[in-house]
Image 1 (tube, rainbow, N blue to C red):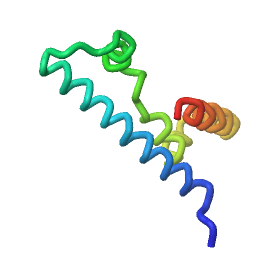
Image 2 (image 1 turned 30 degrees about the vertical axis):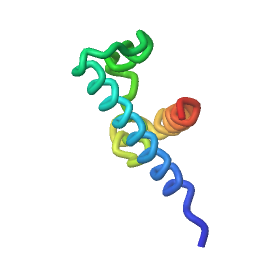
Image 3 (image 1 turned 90 degrees about the vertical axis):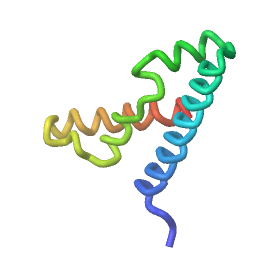
Image 4 (image 1 turned 180 degrees about the vertical axis):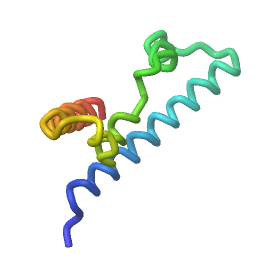
Length: 88
């Protein structure tokens, strides 16, 4: 049986989250050894919104639906999932 679309998205998010975690650890390790990193990487590391997958996880879990109307939830799911795959 073919995997369900939601399972594919959850798998993709897990892979994406691991890449983010690995990058964050690599940058922090370089900084702790007083090595330099690119300014773009430093900005990414310092910016709370970059590398944060909480919204994507909430969309896949459906945990935010109680706070939004159905139409708003559907619009947000489309937007967040589309943004997620643009970043990957």
